[in-house]
Image (cartoon, rainbow, N blue to C red; front, top):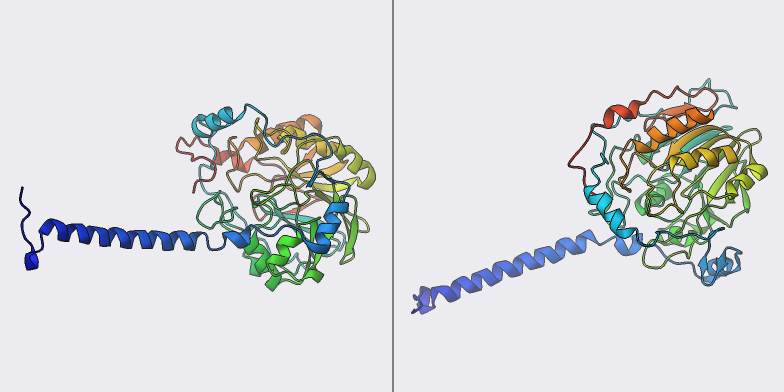
Length: 399
């Protein structure tokens, strides 16, 4: 078949082919530009491994052996043979893994009322593991993550299921910022950079995590790194880094920075923050050394059969709370990001049932709700109205 000439005697098919190549080339260039924009912050978000004097401290740690930090008991981050079961649960489990409506978010006051007694102890849960602790006139922010996704990228990764109750620039003046470990849902580059500019508080972090903060511009004098059992006094409060059963890492290299829980001690009040942890008998030792605690902030969500050693199920969180000699239990690490195959309401449903069975005082605040530890609001099951089945629930990491 003979080609039909086009303009200037050029075959029409040849001209169309050139136009198609130009269009495809433009699309490819645009795609590369979009991809480059999407990953522009990823190298910085990965952070930095400890070096210099910081690396020397890491190597001297009793927890650092064979080139990596170790848990107090033997731990697997994922059990052998559970990958297929995990994938099946994620894709076909049928759980309602997202809320069935809008999560009620309260906007907290910038500061407690002027008439608040000096000895009052308060907790504001902002979502996931982020919380503000008001203790003896000081304010301590824990594991702040304000980004829309807990991921090195702004375009992919688990996305927030409810708004943050208050913008970072409307937080009250902070006296300390605690980080439990360097996973993305606990340590967020954008949030750290904003707090670097908008606050003057020190960051208290487990050993090695300061390398990430320095890469993100936090001045060294604002970084306090602690090994397990080490203590620092900041703004009149004592902070002790305590053990946890977890792991660390923001890229392909793991366990080069330490993870942990935190003990916050004032003259009269004590708070325990679990960070992420599987259950282990170290909780009883922490309770003996540092308890009793007026309130514990305990990880209760994002658990799975595949990783029982690194996250507690709700019943274990209650046991750990009792080991710690805790007063009020406030659950964290649930409800904000879709990180595990269980139903969205399941962690606090199970926690409420177990707490009632074992006589544990419990508060389950809405995001942004201020809990007065000595006079907590009654548990009202507010989340249960959002537990309607959602057949279209996406797998973890979807928008």
